Length: 242
Image (cartoon, rainbow, N blue to C red; front, top):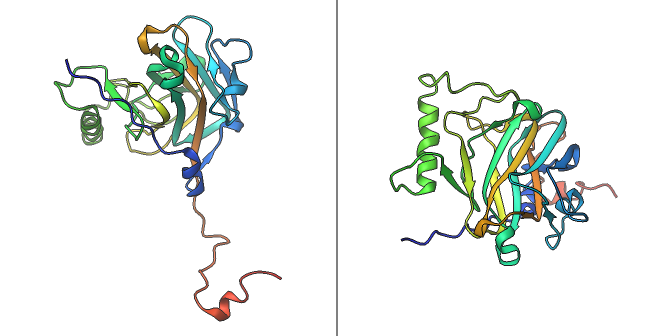
């Protein structure tokens, strides 16, 4: 029996922030948890400290609820997990759901990015998870009209593929897990609410640990206020106010 490949870590999200292409918007949302051990709740999940963590204290699935006051464009989630420290508390299967509220959440198909593997809910005859996800994504785009009944607008407003819901399968992750949230047109989703559900842990662990969660929206470029770059010495002398 082949040994499962460990989930590779993604880049530090702060590197993405420095590119000025995304912005972290978790502070704009209301966060809640299905359960937590006292002193290991939302504050620890959002404190920018990789040594602290949320610890659930109840039955599975363990839920993180992220609710925005207005419909918000979300490009990516970044989750930090540390199997070396947390072992059986480390998530092994995650589901991402979007919607307007708790009553109409839909599990969405997530694209693969560095630091996460995608496992379809159906067998893929031995095809690697990355290749399978890419093939399924292309297929969903090319056959959107043929599959129109399954390609329904989600309650949140983004057109998402719910015909074959998929979960993220993690194998001993130690680092950042990047989860792009894209609709069938490969655009960032727009939603009022995101729910992250931990469906299973490593070694059949009961409770879970998550150390950090970041939520990113794309930064819209604007030509207003942008000036050409100074290329001569004379111009560079006047590029700052003394």
